[in-house]
Image (tube, rainbow, N blue to C red; front, side):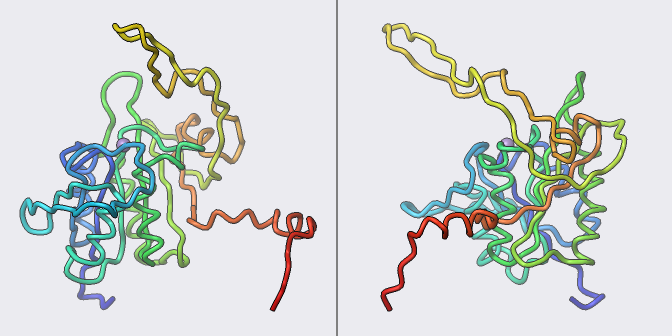
Length: 256
Ligand code: MN
């Protein structure tokens, strides 16, 4: 990228095109580069890395460099990078999600999947989420200011092929910034059963009773300590330390 060229930043989310988090993010990133917004026309939280393959995708232009898509965050990044942005994309930023994406929740997150899709397409990416303070709503503008600093750093340094960053910004006042591991949590009483008016049971997934594990270098711990959490992720799910163990089972054959 020559110094005269502004970086081109694709912005997406999973809360939907009109969500306040993406509006604040796109506005703030305008100070860092040329922003192209390609976002789902409705909420897709929990959509994870779903890609729409069995029906056409419709795109509505909402002005220059602004597009609503009737698909998932992954669809948006795919369409944005290959079709709608009209040229090379230097960075994808997904968010700002309403609510943290920490630990195991990362695997369900449409916000994180938007960044993961970018990484699979060889574009550096950041997923960003925030949560409200005890009183009041989320401070999207404050989180967006932090993302702008980080975006400049990523554009300057680059990320290794296939890597992306999962960022969680706690409410102010913040006590620092930590590089963390993806944490875990303990699920219990996670399904709520009710009875409908016809006497049939129905279920809600997700109860209040989940406990983050208190991993000292984990993402949960960082935001609990009021620190911004930055976790480097990659889409390769291979558990490398298990390769030798699995090979020792004697399953491998070579008939060639
Ligand atoms: Mn969401």
